Image (cartoon, rainbow, N blue to C red; front, side, top):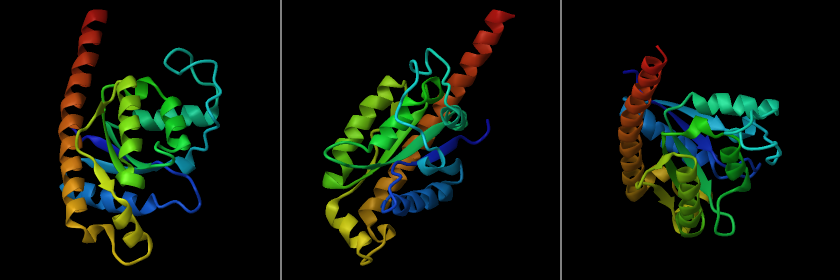
Length: 201
Protein backbone atom coordinates (compact mmCIF):
# COMPACT_ATOMS: atom_id res chain seq x y z
CA UNK A 1 0.00 0.00 0.00
CA UNK A 2 1.27 3.46 -0.89
CA UNK A 3 1.82 5.98 1.88
CA UNK A 4 -1.35 7.84 2.91
CA UNK A 5 -1.38 11.42 1.65
CA UNK A 6 -2.31 13.98 4.29
CA UNK A 7 -3.37 17.57 3.58
CA UNK A 8 -2.60 20.29 6.08
CA UNK A 9 -5.31 22.83 5.31
CA UNK A 10 -4.64 26.47 6.12
CA UNK A 11 -8.01 27.44 7.59
CA UNK A 12 -7.72 31.22 7.38
CA UNK A 13 -7.15 33.59 4.46
CA UNK A 14 -6.74 36.93 6.26
CA UNK A 15 -3.68 39.02 5.36
CA UNK A 16 -2.77 39.17 9.06
CA UNK A 17 -3.44 35.50 9.77
CA UNK A 18 -1.48 33.52 12.37
CA UNK A 19 -2.22 30.24 10.59
CA UNK A 20 1.06 30.04 8.67
CA UNK A 21 2.99 29.59 11.92
CA UNK A 22 1.19 26.44 13.16
CA UNK A 23 0.98 25.10 9.60
CA UNK A 24 4.74 25.21 9.10
CA UNK A 25 5.32 23.74 12.56
CA UNK A 26 2.85 20.84 12.26
CA UNK A 27 3.99 20.11 8.68
CA UNK A 28 7.59 19.75 9.82
CA UNK A 29 6.55 17.33 12.57
CA UNK A 30 4.31 15.36 10.21
CA UNK A 31 7.06 15.02 7.60
CA UNK A 32 9.44 13.69 10.24
CA UNK A 33 7.19 10.66 10.80
CA UNK A 34 8.11 9.28 7.39
CA UNK A 35 5.14 6.93 6.84
CA UNK A 36 2.85 9.58 5.34
CA UNK A 37 3.10 12.10 2.54
CA UNK A 38 2.28 15.66 3.54
CA UNK A 39 1.09 18.63 1.47
CA UNK A 40 0.08 22.09 2.63
CA UNK A 41 -3.20 23.24 1.04
CA UNK A 42 -3.86 26.97 1.32
CA UNK A 43 -7.43 28.22 0.98
CA UNK A 44 -6.00 31.42 -0.53
CA UNK A 45 -5.26 29.32 -3.62
CA UNK A 46 -8.95 28.41 -3.87
CA UNK A 47 -10.91 31.70 -3.70
CA UNK A 48 -14.32 30.12 -3.30
CA UNK A 49 -17.38 32.39 -3.26
CA UNK A 50 -19.81 31.94 -0.40
CA UNK A 51 -21.74 28.77 -1.21
CA UNK A 52 -24.07 29.60 -4.10
CA UNK A 53 -24.71 26.34 -5.92
CA UNK A 54 -28.08 24.78 -6.72
CA UNK A 55 -27.40 22.13 -4.09
CA UNK A 56 -24.56 20.29 -2.39
CA UNK A 57 -22.16 18.59 -4.77
CA UNK A 58 -23.33 15.37 -3.12
CA UNK A 59 -26.46 15.76 -5.28
CA UNK A 60 -25.66 18.15 -8.12
CA UNK A 61 -22.27 18.81 -9.77
CA UNK A 62 -20.85 22.23 -8.87
CA UNK A 63 -20.82 24.82 -11.67
CA UNK A 64 -18.14 27.09 -10.21
CA UNK A 65 -14.69 26.44 -11.69
CA UNK A 66 -12.88 27.09 -8.40
CA UNK A 67 -15.25 24.70 -6.63
CA UNK A 68 -14.48 22.00 -9.18
CA UNK A 69 -10.75 22.58 -8.74
CA UNK A 70 -11.16 22.48 -4.96
CA UNK A 71 -13.06 19.19 -5.08
CA UNK A 72 -10.35 17.60 -7.22
CA UNK A 73 -7.70 18.76 -4.75
CA UNK A 74 -9.64 17.43 -1.73
CA UNK A 75 -10.09 14.07 -3.47
CA UNK A 76 -6.30 13.60 -3.71
CA UNK A 77 -5.90 13.03 0.02
CA UNK A 78 -6.37 10.22 2.51
CA UNK A 79 -6.74 12.50 5.54
CA UNK A 80 -6.71 16.11 6.64
CA UNK A 81 -5.35 18.33 9.39
CA UNK A 82 -7.07 21.71 9.58
CA UNK A 83 -5.83 24.81 11.35
CA UNK A 84 -8.78 26.17 13.28
CA UNK A 85 -8.73 29.79 14.35
CA UNK A 86 -11.54 30.60 16.77
CA UNK A 87 -13.70 33.63 15.96
CA UNK A 88 -16.63 34.33 18.31
CA UNK A 89 -16.67 30.77 19.68
CA UNK A 90 -16.59 29.18 16.21
CA UNK A 91 -14.39 28.39 13.20
CA UNK A 92 -13.61 30.78 10.37
CA UNK A 93 -16.31 31.29 7.77
CA UNK A 94 -13.85 30.54 4.97
CA UNK A 95 -13.07 27.11 6.39
CA UNK A 96 -16.73 26.17 6.90
CA UNK A 97 -17.42 27.35 3.36
CA UNK A 98 -14.60 25.19 2.00
CA UNK A 99 -16.01 22.16 3.80
CA UNK A 100 -19.42 22.83 2.26
CA UNK A 101 -18.00 23.06 -1.25
CA UNK A 102 -17.03 19.37 -1.31
CA UNK A 103 -18.99 16.27 -0.30
CA UNK A 104 -18.04 12.72 -1.27
CA UNK A 105 -14.39 13.80 -1.52
CA UNK A 106 -14.25 13.99 2.29
CA UNK A 107 -15.98 10.68 2.95
CA UNK A 108 -14.38 7.92 5.03
CA UNK A 109 -11.18 9.84 5.74
CA UNK A 110 -9.76 11.10 9.07
CA UNK A 111 -9.79 14.75 10.13
CA UNK A 112 -7.62 16.33 12.80
CA UNK A 113 -7.34 19.88 14.07
CA UNK A 114 -4.80 22.41 15.29
CA UNK A 115 -6.81 25.02 17.17
CA UNK A 116 -5.74 28.42 18.42
CA UNK A 117 -7.34 31.45 20.01
CA UNK A 118 -9.71 31.54 22.97
CA UNK A 119 -9.31 28.31 25.04
CA UNK A 120 -6.98 27.00 22.37
CA UNK A 121 -9.63 27.05 19.67
CA UNK A 122 -11.50 24.28 21.51
CA UNK A 123 -14.98 25.57 20.64
CA UNK A 124 -14.10 25.98 16.98
CA UNK A 125 -12.65 22.46 16.92
CA UNK A 126 -15.76 20.98 18.56
CA UNK A 127 -17.97 22.54 15.89
CA UNK A 128 -15.66 21.35 13.13
CA UNK A 129 -15.81 17.82 14.52
CA UNK A 130 -19.60 17.88 14.11
CA UNK A 131 -19.25 19.15 10.54
CA UNK A 132 -16.70 16.40 9.87
CA UNK A 133 -19.09 13.70 11.08
CA UNK A 134 -21.84 15.01 8.80
CA UNK A 135 -19.37 14.84 5.90
CA UNK A 136 -18.64 11.20 6.83
CA UNK A 137 -15.13 11.94 8.03
CA UNK A 138 -13.61 10.33 11.11
CA UNK A 139 -12.52 13.16 13.43
CA UNK A 140 -9.67 12.20 15.73
CA UNK A 141 -9.77 12.51 19.49
CA UNK A 142 -6.21 13.86 19.51
CA UNK A 143 -5.86 17.55 18.68
CA UNK A 144 -3.55 20.48 19.27
CA UNK A 145 -4.83 23.46 21.25
CA UNK A 146 -2.61 26.55 21.27
CA UNK A 147 -3.94 28.47 24.26
CA UNK A 148 -3.93 32.25 24.45
CA UNK A 149 -0.74 32.58 26.54
CA UNK A 150 1.23 30.37 24.16
CA UNK A 151 -0.32 32.15 21.16
CA UNK A 152 0.74 35.57 22.46
CA UNK A 153 4.27 34.41 23.30
CA UNK A 154 4.70 33.20 19.72
CA UNK A 155 2.91 36.14 18.14
CA UNK A 156 5.13 38.59 20.03
CA UNK A 157 8.29 36.73 19.01
CA UNK A 158 9.19 35.60 22.52
CA UNK A 159 9.02 31.89 21.69
CA UNK A 160 8.44 29.43 18.84
CA UNK A 161 5.76 26.73 18.91
CA UNK A 162 8.53 24.14 18.96
CA UNK A 163 9.69 25.56 22.32
CA UNK A 164 6.57 24.22 24.04
CA UNK A 165 6.97 20.54 24.99
CA UNK A 166 3.24 20.09 25.63
CA UNK A 167 2.43 21.31 22.10
CA UNK A 168 5.07 19.06 20.54
CA UNK A 169 3.62 16.08 22.42
CA UNK A 170 0.09 16.95 21.28
CA UNK A 171 1.26 17.37 17.69
CA UNK A 172 2.99 13.99 17.63
CA UNK A 173 -0.08 12.36 19.17
CA UNK A 174 -2.29 13.92 16.50
CA UNK A 175 0.01 12.79 13.68
CA UNK A 176 0.13 9.23 15.02
CA UNK A 177 -3.65 9.05 15.27
CA UNK A 178 -4.23 10.59 11.82
CA UNK A 179 -1.71 8.16 10.33
CA UNK A 180 -3.38 5.11 11.90
CA UNK A 181 -6.83 6.10 10.72
CA UNK A 182 -5.60 7.14 7.28
CA UNK A 183 -4.00 3.73 6.74
CA UNK A 184 -7.01 1.81 8.05
CA UNK A 185 -9.59 3.78 6.08
CA UNK A 186 -7.49 3.72 2.91
CA UNK A 187 -7.53 -0.08 3.04
CA UNK A 188 -11.28 -0.08 3.67
CA UNK A 189 -12.01 2.34 0.80
CA UNK A 190 -9.89 0.27 -1.58
CA UNK A 191 -11.79 -2.86 -0.51
CA UNK A 192 -15.07 -1.06 -1.26
CA UNK A 193 -13.86 -0.28 -4.78
CA UNK A 194 -12.89 -3.91 -5.38
CA UNK A 195 -16.28 -5.08 -4.10
CA UNK A 196 -18.12 -2.68 -6.41
CA UNK A 197 -16.02 -3.81 -9.36
CA UNK A 198 -16.76 -7.44 -8.53
CA UNK A 199 -20.51 -6.72 -8.40
CA UNK A 200 -20.37 -4.96 -11.76
CA UNK A 201 -18.41 -7.80 -13.43
